[in-house]
Length: 104
Image (tube, rainbow, N blue to C red):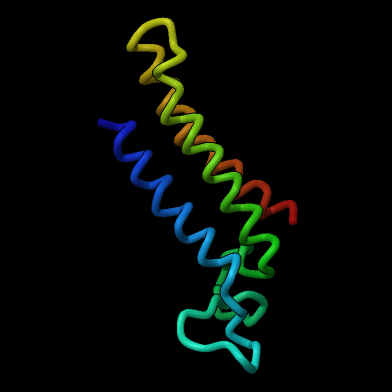
């Protein structure tokens, strides 16, 4: 069940990443509806809204982490270690992204 949830999350984040690649920042004069707040300060305290590159990079790290967590049970020697790997990866990737944000 956890794998299904992670794969749905992976699909949603992938769609967001692909749309973000083609959308202008909200501060751009030609930006229309559905713009992203890169560099405008509207992203609040989220460091990955400072630039499009940071946003795309953090999204890629998230997607890799979700994929690793979803497929970890398939590589594990038994169900218990597979579930443990899924949980550890799913918890550690958001923490890693926050640490990256503190560094940047």
